[in-house]
Amino acid sequence: MAEQAGSESLRTYEEINAKIKRGDAVVLTADEFVAHAAQSGLEAAAKEVDVVTTGTFGAMCSSGAFLNFGHSEPPIKMSTCWLNDVPAYKGLAAVDAYIGATAMSESRGLEYGGGHVIEDLVSGKEIALRAGAYGTDCYPRKSIQTILRLEDLNQAILVNPRNAYEHYNAATNSTDRILYTYMGTLLPNFGNVTYSGAGQLSPLYKDKGFETIGIGTRIFLGGTVGYVVGEGTQHSPQTQFGTIMVRGDLKKMNPRYLRGATFHKYGTSLYVGLGIPIPIVNLRVAQSAALADDQIHTNIIDYGVPSRNRPTVKKTSYAELKSGEVYFNDRKTRASPLSSFKYAGEIAETLKRWILEAAFTLSRPAELLPTHREFKPLEVSRTEPRVRDVMTSKVTTASVGHTVNAAADILVSKGIDHLPLTNHENKLVGIVTSWDIANAVAQGKAAISEVMTTNVITALENDTLDIVALKMTQKNISGLPVVDRENRVIGIVTARDLAKRREVFSR
Amino acid sequence: MKLRLVYPHEKVSVPVLSEVVHKTGLLVNILEAKVTAKTGEVVVDVPARGKQLQDAISLFEAAGVNVEKIPTAVSIDYNRCTSCGACVSPCPVGAIRLHVDWTVELDEEKCIRCLICVDACPVRAIRSL
Image 1 (tube, one colour):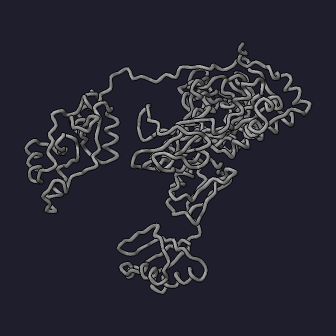
Image 2 (cartoon, helix red, strand yellow; image 1 turned 180 degrees about the horizontal axis):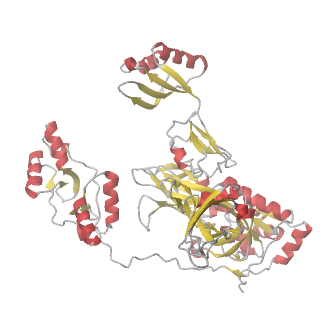
Image 3 (tube, chains in turn yellow, orange; image 1 turned 180 degrees about the vertical axis):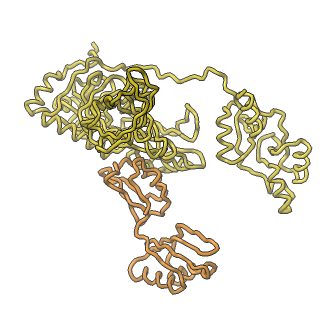
């Protein structure tokens, strides 16, 4: 008969806490437990070890803090509020605010954001508060500007709606330009791989059945004691993308484990240090806690495709990623993490020490987290214009064998600027523009093949206009041939088509 | 050793660098080059040390080129660095590595001053010098 989830068949929370208080609890970090289970066998390790500690230190964008400023004289009901020029959410009571990690400074932009405000608060630095109000009978003040520190606040509570992803995708880039993403800097032509997540130290992967982690689980958060509030947003445990929502007292935290971050040309975030103690209550939990890097898999995703459905380039393991090189497309590519294994290990060690010193006991969750959650996309209900709606279908093309003079005649007689060139199967092989023709005349070239662009940037019928506009800006071009899957020309879309469409929409 | 070579106006058209390579046999690598109407500035990596390096510098100076030694291109502030690794794989020459204890390490000899790591660092712990 199957045991109930979370069954305490090996030991109870009370037994573990009694051992912690006596000072004879057996506590290992996840790295140590993986090695121990491999050497002594899973069952022996499970019988011997009471608690396995985990850790992670990564950029967690869904993080922020609730702040209560206290009341000024005369009082104000703030409706807008900035901390060091970073806007805070004010849809709350008079002097309550929420500062989110990804909010960005209105004067410094990507270089400083909510994550940096949180780090500066925890570091004891002075923060400039500026707020506005419409003024009421009970809150007459209409504006305020002052300087405050963490110690001046009544409450500063870190409440992060989504932290500690069980594991995460790895990233690479198929395009011919450097991409700056939330997965860091991705070199062109699959030049590198970046990845996130702590592998065999990952808190949620060490209890992948969610048998011990739940509402009220006591954890390490930002250098002090915190708690699991419940499932995190986008919690998707059935695909090992489980997440948790956590809270902790900012006033007790350590800036070493809360770091404001900037991802170049992407935005700001907050690096959060988080660790969870896993009580080895039954054999299934032990089995999960013993999972090694080579048993924890993830996909390398091509971030060069600007879509929700980015293609997988390769399935890999944390063991391969951590080796520093990944093999795909017939070659080795350098791989590096975005989340610190050094700090993750340090957090697991710190949590272990707290437990061994009886400064930290384990809590049985009031309720376990769901083990299944549908992960739904956001469908766009309004019909968005696509390339097929704005393109010219009666596209004029020419054979690649034409002369420059013949091409010039076509451009002039048709009143067009772009001439896609095709082979005998009507497949696209190049393009010439009126500018190319002018150039050819200036240089005295006669054959079109000498002046055409062969590496043609194209569009698909189903592309959205945003994608087409982005390509035009990036490549500094004004027209894209529209091709089908076989690279046959079926239309052309120009900057003029986009401009016309925008006019119609703005009306 | 990386050197910044500043060419005065009248030397811009003289192939000083080629002459030095020819005379010393050193495989000098050009990292940066800026030539304007008034002056020229080239940053090179000279794979030499001690007397060999000094000889090369003397040859440049004898040809009227001002030589400035560049000890390091970037520095990591370990008070801010969390060794997250975000700078490691973007480095095109593998000059930044993760040590076995997962600490980020910079190999100054390999660095080609592209500075991609400066922007890649999420906590701005890498500065260009």
